[in-house]
Length: 321
Image (cartoon, rainbow, N blue to C red):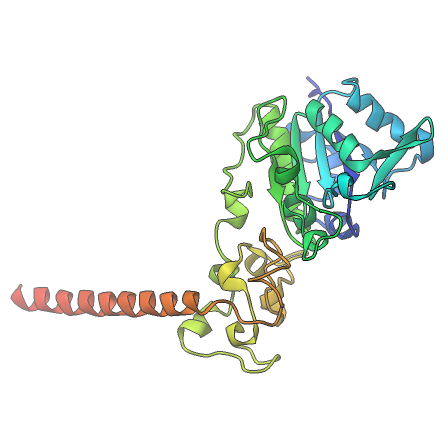
């Protein structure tokens, strides 16, 4: 039996469209895989609205959004790209709008609230929609915020699903593709929801730090650190925020297994974190707090002594036998 269609409405607020570009570069699965039913259990997905890549324009383009707001396009997953501005700070104008009604611009936040109320799941694509991102950096004149601030941390969709945040600046294309496929499978009852951390990020992606996933971490443990860009050692002294950021990109690569900031010589700037781009993640070249490095060294010394003791203990037992 052909699975019930699940519609996708993708709207953009305060965004640069970088997350869309990144998503289009996903390969495992790709956008084509998702839309053509390459994964049988996730077949039947239709992308009904995306202002950047859809063919319709003008009033015709907005028909899907308006149908979703009225509950005529069910079930649908809402994907949000970009931060949500505080329209109360806009004065007589407005910060962001999607279409109009009788000559009046409909603000992004107004559309967002109506759509979220009808969606079976809401996925925040990128750090801007997850936490506010670049637009909410100080002094934040537009009052930009992420989805959890706008809808509330305890918000649940009509299907009882919390907001799922997939941060990154831009989002990792395959992170988002995987989470969207996972959300569809969860809605259909094939899988449980991915386990989320305190910031509603899937733990299987964001459960470890960049430092844990970094190919240079062993060099740091060996006491080898880079003092200039281009040197192949740990970049903690150059401002890398990997020890206090959560992402698996250095291990899995960014496109087709290639890339990942620290894997190709760049520092981690902490773009998946709620505070980004403010402290402790900015300025980008400022060193991460020293407390991490001190704590890790102490843990390393304890672990080393423990390993030596076990080897010594084995030799003593061997002599007794």
